[in-house]
Length: 197
Image (cartoon, rainbow, N blue to C red; front, side):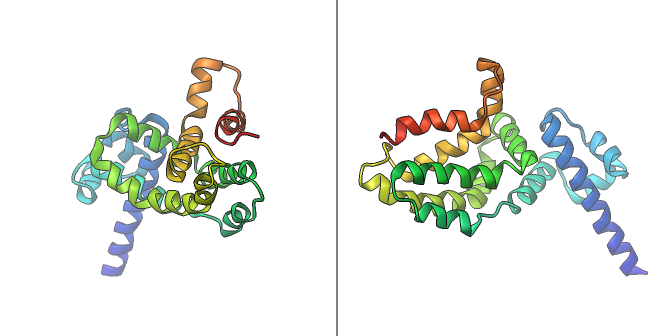
């Protein structure tokens, strides 16, 4: 009998996380109540507070679960290492970051809402999961930066700029360009500044 109860508890928690992930990604932290999440998960609100003492703790758990799914593909890293020039290395770096993050739309939206609605105390969680991604990719670009073939202060700053392009391209283009330009168009403009012919 206890085995059934434990699996039910885990099932309730999984449903809570799934409901919260979808709602937080679509409406942000402030746009969702625990009552909404409970209804979406098919539990009562008290059940949420048994697992997470605050709504913020639930948001952090959702963000942590989404960030744990981010994985770099070795074949794409190898393509950066095989690049013959800085412009190709930069383009392949963008492709890697785009392939890693773009298929995780909920994560991208959670990170956008996080930056707008949450405090600095979330930063260590983001650094923990995304820091390795940034550091690894930066090591592949460092030779081009140190030779002066990529114009930037550091390879890490360059990688962070590419991540920022991916995170913000839709919002910026909707607000300012209105033409639905792709992140590739933003990258191309950025690449012309960073990697001269």
